[in-house]
Amino acid sequence: MELSKRLDITQKHLSIIENGSQFASASLIARISQELKVTPAALFGEDLNQHYFNNLYARLSTDFENKMTWLYSVLKHEIKETIKNETSKTHI
Image 1: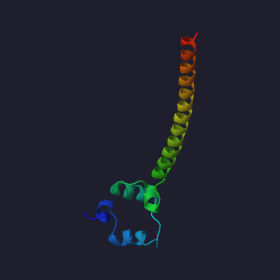
Image 2 (image 1 turned 180 degrees about the horizontal axis):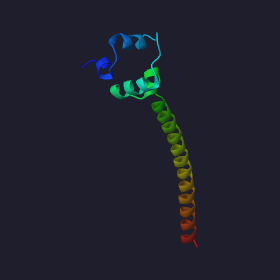
Image 3 (image 1 turned 120 degrees about the vertical axis):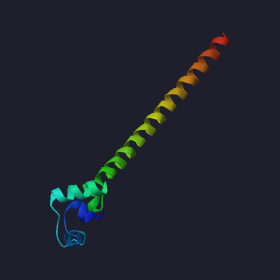
Image 4 (image 1 turned 90 degrees about the horizontal axis):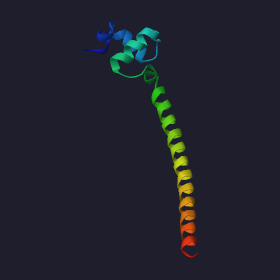
């Protein structure tokens, strides 16, 4: 079924909205996004949810990488100290 029929508007009305000659109401934007299974922001060329999650993922990845780098350095230091102490005990 055509999108215009599912939205209960004329094809001409939908075409006018698609061409940018007329703005759609907030309720019509919501209905269009539901029919197309996208966020309302995606209808305007930018999916704000995807942008938000991409930024969040980047921040979390960086944070995780920083924590892993820190953990590696701490463990490396602890292992060196343990080996040094164990070596010292065997030579006494």
